[in-house]
Length: 105
Image 1: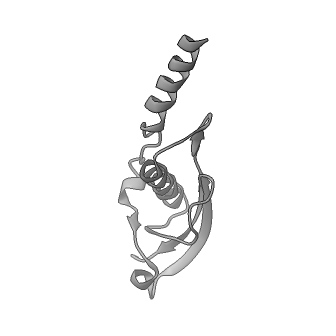
Image 2: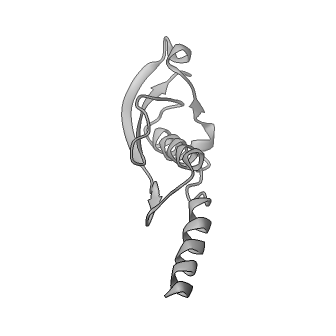
């Protein structure tokens, strides 16, 4: 039983530090901005993205979760024809919303 607990602990520690979401080639062209930077831009949509924030009883690193959420939002924005995203909510249980904008013609 002790060996199983140690194995689960090791797996949780390893997976909590991994970044599973990668920015696509199209997503890499999407800027991450704040609301001041998108004045004069066209608001196309809002997207809500989510990732796993806990593995078993262990919470994943908050910075990694935030990075993955931003990566997913950038990928989604590319598919919607946007070029900029702005977070529109706080991260809650591995979920966050972003507004998608078209700033460049």
